[in-house]
Length: 530
Image (cartoon, rainbow, N blue to C red; front, side):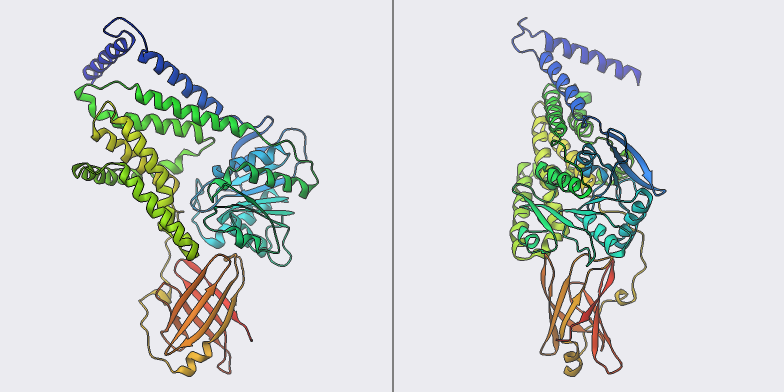
């Protein structure tokens, strides 16, 4: 073990001397100077990326017993108003850092929590469990003056408000459109013009909320958009009678740090000398490791490493599959960038289709392709860099590692407890022929109102067409036609996975319908008399 290592060290010293002294004895553009500049950029970038607004102190903690949280503490003596922050689906508390930092700079004590099944939370995910957990945190740190929820965090926070366990003075929903009930607090909706889940027209139609739209953000960029962050701070300060401070600027230094860190990594990768034959296999992993370290050190401030290490087996498996695909593409002489082009075309197609079929926007396919585009872009660039002084195999290996790590770091679904199958889902339903009088009894309009589980309003209109029922489900951001087939006199189903149980009174009249969806709680809708 020692002898090969000594040989490698001797070879490295020879390569370093060769970089410093070219064969002609001149030093017009020596690689060692570029390497020194790259290391300097890397170090400065890491330093700048950890800057926080003056006077704001950030620490990790647990609240309500076992709930991991980031606490943002403002400067100056208290008492300070309290803000509670909740992230979105498949995310973690670190994603709301910009909002927590800006609110703390404005004088708020902020608690940014990991929701069940996400990040470092030891709990399993469930819709109602998330809302109840937010109620627990509110009781532990409260009273909560301002609540900020992104995406699912906003909808689950709305469930906690409707349940009565969360009573903030102001509710800020970022990329979400929760219903807070008749006696809910003032509601501020923040979103980007290109939000994939809540189009501007849907938000502007709300009469119970104030809406602020950013002209350049989508669902993910809403987390960092300075226009939306500043709007949240101004509204929060107004809710507690404070004067908002000047807009925070340290995020610009952190952005510059990320850029410098990546430039430093790029310089180090380009200056990586050609390895000896015995160590040639290590070139690809070394290039990938340089950029992964740069990304982690410059973007993962106060990041809990354990949840990410827990996904390592999945990342290794994904990287292995990606490598096999890339090797097959190389054998067929298919360029690496073609995968990026394919993902971009599919993602764009999903977005265009989503304009006409809004329910498609919540499909896993769209999330996968939109999330894979940045990973494929970075992987393609780094693969080209690795192949600069190496081989196509080196480039394929780098791209496989980057894609495998990225997909399961940022697109990991929450952890759920194993569930026993529900009776109505134990076997595939079979359609039967039913008397038209029994079908006509189900015809009408049903209204499903928000509860602790569901944060939107859905209206289901059912009519009879021949020997089956046809339904039209309309919600805030979806419009879904469905064909409903009878399984019994009261149980019906459609082929997309929805199932219905119609409730009858003593006179045999249908008064309500219960919707069943796999892995979601039942939702009851009352039949409207007219």
